[in-house]
Amino acid sequence: MPLPEPRPGLVIRYDYLWTREAAAGRIQGKERPACLVVATDSGISPRFVVILPITHTRPNKDTVGVEIPAKVRAALRLDDAKCWVIVSGHNVDAWPNAGLAWIPGRAQDFAYGFIPPGLFAQVKAKFLELCENSQGAGVRR
Image (cartoon, rainbow, N blue to C red; front, side):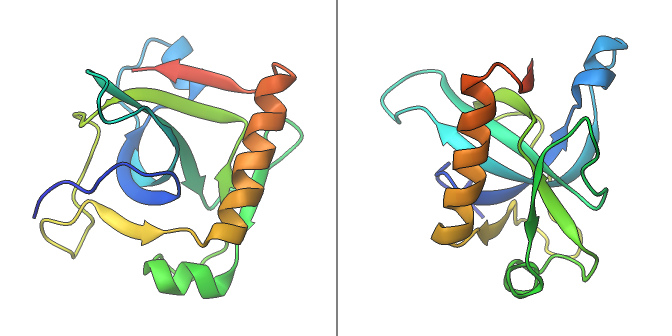
C-alpha cells in the first residue's frame, strides 16, 4: 500500500522519541499511534512533518494533552483504553521517514485515519499556544 499523503490530523504508526529519551542519547523510541499536526508544502524537498505522540499515560504537571474520545478511538481502530494526544512534545521528521511503522494486525498500512476536524482544531490550538509561549519541547529526527 502506498504511503498516505501527510496531512494535518492524520494518525500514523510512528517510532516516537520523547525529549527525555533524546537527551539520554537514544535515537529510537517506541512505535505508537501519533498525529501529524503540521506538514510542509509538497513542493518543498525534503518535506517535513511535525508529529505528536498518542499515549495511554494521563497528562501530568509536566505534560499537556487532549483526550481522544471513545467514539474517535473506535473509528481509528485504536484500543479501548483512554488515550491522549500530547501537545507539549513533538518530533520533527522528514516525510517519508524511517520511523513509520506498519500497524499491528493491518499488514501494509501505516495510517489509522484522521482525527475529526473539531478535535483536531483543539489539538492544533493547544499545540500552537504552547509553541507561542515556548512551552513545547521537540526532537529533530
